[in-house]
Length: 381
Image (cartoon, rainbow, N blue to C red; front, side, top):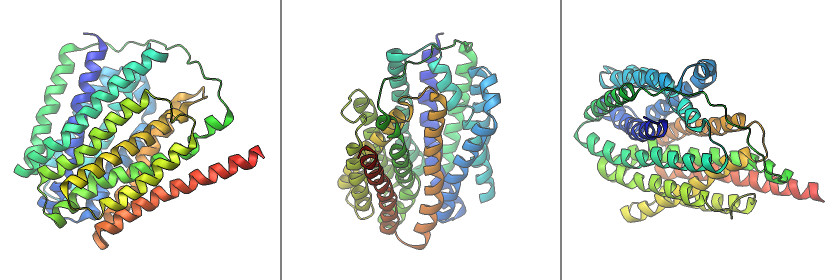
């Protein structure tokens, strides 16, 4: 079997399973161990801390092993971590399971993306990358709905269902058993762009951190609060949250084919202003329809933030691997900081207060935008 069907299938399946497990983690901590939102945030941060550490410390191993071998190792680790969560007799075992999952994930996405890009450059690489993003994000769209429906039955049922999913994925990979080819891609041609265009990566990176601070709050803390404060069912919460993922997927695909936002600071400023206002609204809205609209708007704006960091981060660079590594670490930084801050803050304040803090983080990114604009104009003068 050719590698692309294998990669796209693996991306979609783990997009479903990984996000469903993280969604289930919220209600498992609450229902099975009667913990507060502080533990939920700490669990989220633990997953991403171990992911980043394993990516950094295990980079030589990741580069030396064939991609298909890394995937099999990862699935074995994901199965072990999920099993630990399903059988957890105490909250500490939940942390152990999440730590194993975070470590195992480092052997999944980076090798899969590296295998995807082998032998492709230019428009061909952009096309298959778009299809890849569509696959994993499609899995992310359906996972809150599946996870919410299963959690309404029982959080443990959701975990056992994901265990079965990983077994099926492992059998699939073992049966097709493709060999990871070592094709050396040709060196990318860098565009002849101005220094302003390439340095736009700095406000874009700050913006990405703020965006993922908000995304983590909506993905992990908001579901906990919405059930507690508004009495929403877990299925309904998953449905509402899925609007953010759907909107972000559409935005990343459609905006990626357009060029109006490229090399233009004003679109970062506009998106950050809108995102700050939307996050404040999320903390006060209780109407399901308005919440779905707000989630969709958050999805579009964070999607633009993701694209801005991805595009401006590599523009004019000859070391694109390093730049994309920074991009991934910025995302993880947003996850980790939001997990700790928002989880602990909600435990001692209110949902509106946490949403305001998220808006404040976006406000800091906006301040960076304006500082960059003043600095650039001073240099021009």
